Amino acid sequence: MPTVIGSFEERSWCPTASTSPRAKVLTTRSVPLRESLDFWHDAVLATLVGMDIATEGRTYDAALRTDHLGDLQITTVDCDPGRVHRAPRFIARGDGRHVFVALQSTGRAQVEQDGRTTELRAGDIGFFETVRPFRTTFPERFQLKIFAVPRDLLERPEADLRQLTARALRPSGGLTALLTPLMSRLADTSEAYGTPMAERLAQGVIDLMAATAAHQLGEDPTELPGADRVLLLRIKTFVRWHLSDPGLTPQVIAGAHDISVRSLHRLFEAENTTLCQWIRELRLHECRRELAARAPGSASLGQVARRWGFTSLAGFSRAFRSSFGLSPTDWLDRDGASRAPGDALC
Image (cartoon, rainbow, N blue to C red; front, side, top):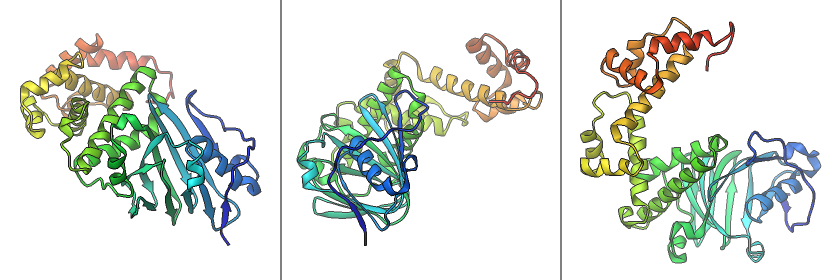
């Protein structure tokens, strides 16, 4: 018989250690096996929302990590197979203040909400409305990355949100192909960002979620508030994917996004930089990272420079000196001297 964890009662539990002052990690392995299901029910209620949790066994192996980026709460859960039900009695508690935008990282999820059913596979994104019931079945062990978004920040009426739930957004193209890796990366590295950067990243990903929702509803995402931020995010991702191409010119980038070169430059003016300066800084950062990671004496400056889009060693050397105050050779000599024998390169 399945074991169902139902009504909630106050019980004490303690989070495990975390590497970030914002982040919290909870795992059933921190309690005796016989208490694992009760512990997990309480952890989900305290971190996300109240749900019934059903499993085939009487013990449960699961963990979650939750952190905050600005207005976003990001929770990654790794769990054994099971079923969850966001029942009306939990909704009545009033804890459904967010829309969940969830990325299925591994495993599968069979979702039911608002009269529809779908299956999320690895890489798919799904919207969950927490003020209405939903059921989700996980037939195998899975990882899910859940972004809890304040409802008003998506700027969608309830009728629109009803049309978004229980639909699998595949990462095969369009905005979803950009949103999927961004959500995955942010969930994995959230603790690396200080408060100002975290707030900017949160605003960017919320804008992209709103644009993705608009696209799913048949609207034009370019007419949304924050559309320029979404476009800039798309452009920056495109540049990173093509950073090694020496032919990555403003004309190429503008053409790939169906905008004028003037509009492209205007987007970067709002960032207090220029497109060319931003690309040059990215390339220099990648060159320096690669040079630092290689054993002393093994790095060919010309090869590294060309690999990251510089067309000549002289041009690379001038740009490097301008940004870091040293030539690449002098920087390597200083960097190598600063390491004790046996130090790991990073």
